[in-house]
Image (cartoon, rainbow, N blue to C red; front, side, top):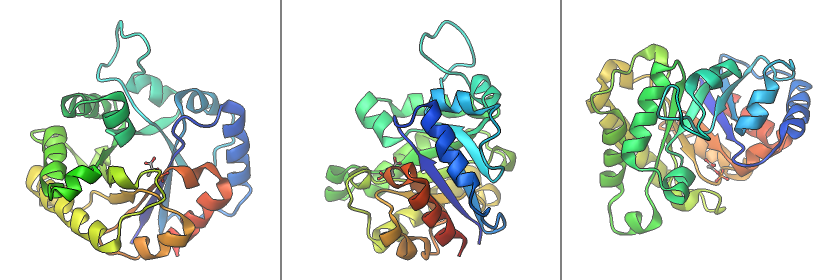
Length: 253
Ligand code: PEP
């Protein structure tokens, strides 16, 4: 199976740091593209500066960490899908827990962004996941279904849009505590069940479901070996090209 490894730099790395990072990545042997697909999500400024520098290895696809819900207009501070595409981005993260829970994005806004992203030619990586309180209250299924329904119900998703889902339990992001294999398997089965209902089996079968939350080389072998896991979305550990490449190599293995 072909895995996906995606790095989310969050609000780290300026343009020069991004250039050096990709220079280092490019000095390494390219991973087997038939076994692993590599995505990187720098901040907007670094993303914009990378386009014409020729440093990003051809085996890395770039994406943005967020996008506007509008295609264009008087929306100060927002960034449109066409701007992201012009900067070389082909993917976009949507509904990351830091945007839902720190910035306060609603399910409705995540849906509007997703629709705008696909209409604007970007491939969405839709992030979903329950908080610790929701897990403790036995509401994982309800929360995941609500997030998937609100983002995807009635949306026209085609294979060309390359939708991916990232299951990222909020309590595992940046905490050093990853979800257990049994918890990941259960959540991914719920996601596969619901996207099959929402999108139809033909589309849903090929939608990669990534796990995210405190992935590191020490826990990744066990996680990526799970049949329900099509790849990983990695925050902290993606900031070093050395540890990121370790994950890429493991995913290709
Ligand atoms: C993330 O930012 O999506 C993430 C999973 O972060 P971390 O790997 O640091 O937990």
